[in-house]
Length: 139
Image 1: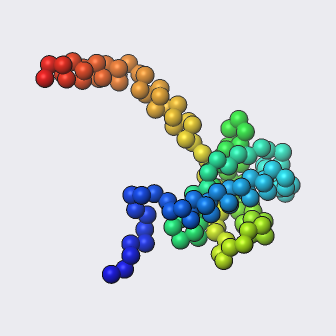
Image 2: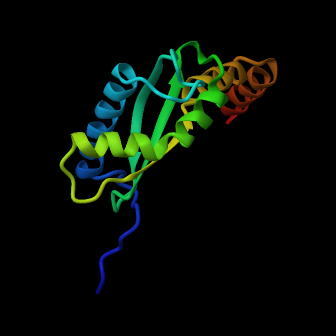
């Protein structure tokens, strides 16, 4: 019987996490020290909080955010345009059998957290929570 090759409920493997962190470190170093020829990236400070690897280690999804979130969409597009160049730079620094393709997406986790926090403190949710507490005390 063949093993299940997809993601399971346990999350990423230790290998995926290790390779993702190594790629993240090298990309951060390249973006910090290197000069990019793309004018949309010139002088922009970019943070890479996480790199998520696919189970076969063929694709690295890099969560990125420019400092202050200024021109975030423009920076994301510029990084995706420069993905092949950055992949080549990372491959020179790492010893891997296969260098994963890089895909850049904006890290919206903090915005999502703020949106959820605002929703939880909205009057509608407070009203629903109060009515649920009243129903629980009656039972």
